[in-house]
Amino acid sequence: SLQQVIKRHRHDRHVVLYPNSGEEWDGEARCWVHGTGCCDPASFASAAQGWRATLGPVPCLIGGCCRTSPDTIAAIRTACLPPPLDRATQPPPTHHGFTFDWEPRTTFMDKRRPTVRQKEPSGGVGGSKDTQLAEHRGRCHCGKVTFTVCAPEHLVVWDCNCSICVMKRNVHFVVPKSHLDLGPTSAPHLTTYTFGSHTAQHLFCRHCGVVPFYQPRSNPDGYAITVQCLEPGTVKDVEVRHFDGEHWEDFIEGSGIRGFSKE
Image (cartoon, rainbow, N blue to C red; front, side, top):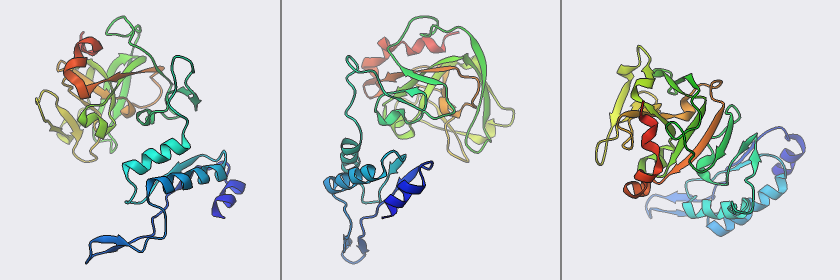
């Protein structure tokens, strides 16, 4: 089969499996018909487990057509990934030099980044023990928005589960407003989205849509910088902290995040 050929000859490549349900859309009946593949969660998960077993150590990413649902994704995850870690008894696994838990929102980590760790908040200036500041450079995807930011070499980043951060996959660190310098030609390329209390000013590039930084509700006197928008080379370490934005009012006071935007 194609999977076995890949296994024999492509050990150094990543494999993307993107199966299709085989159905056709009936415009008059407004439904899918003539299915030949598997689209129910249990069948899809069983097939995905077989694909992983066949490919063995070959790195594999499993996708799906538009008939793939959240239930399907959950079933595949259960079938193909280890169960969640018991932090009290098991150390987290390592991958490409990083230490992380099996959680979808930690997938922002990649090879160009320094050590990534998840731990409970620590004391110190702005909630961080590190006082050594560095100048980090960053940009949006198209490069029309550029910036420099003065921040520690050892960053504390926040992984928030509020309604907008979940959709944007926005993992960020917070600095005082005076620590960010916008590129000289960048301002005209930024636009703003607000909602709810309108305290947060969600700035983004009007061309590529990327949010390199924004003014968060938690820190109106500062900026939240998207860590993945930084150029590599100046960050030595990243500590991931979880912010319960879904229960913002209950979580904010004990989080320590407000101290990060203080001079």
